[in-house]
Amino acid sequence: MRYYKRLYKYELAADFAIQIQIQPERTIEHEYYHLNTTGLLLIRKGYMSDGPSGPTWDSPGLLIGALVHDVGYQMTRDGHFDIYDDRARWDKVYREVIIAHGINPIRAWGHWRILKRVGWKAALPQEDHVYEV
Image 1 (tube, rainbow, N blue to C red):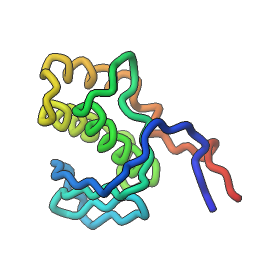
Image 2: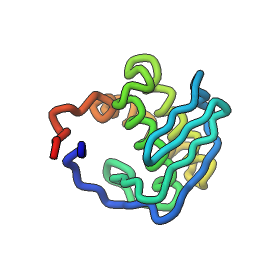
Image 3: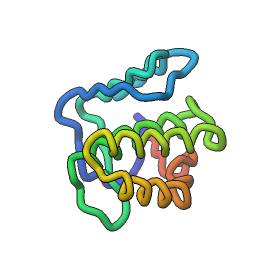
Image 4: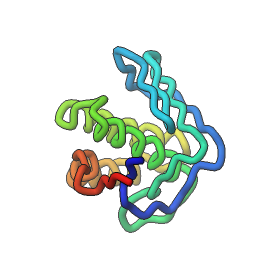
């Protein structure tokens, strides 16, 4: 069994589906997520997320955005997307999702700017945090 050693604040209690602008050439399938070629992202019950980063409160809109963003970065770490070409696309999806879920566009812009500056670290492969059991 492989696992990432990290602390997570949230575990998804039910499947969650959302339409996003990222449409891969082929369907991406994982135990905890599924992204099809039309941009329908399904995140399955049990997926764990650390929620929104930074000094912020975990409001519903930010929780949804962080969940989608965490999955996108995981797909990037797992090799489905390119860290240099696609990370910015996932940051943009985060901004679009939080605005669609009630976050003020100015606040969303601030979150996006922070992701743009420091988020790249979370998209890097984390083999040093992967353990075999």
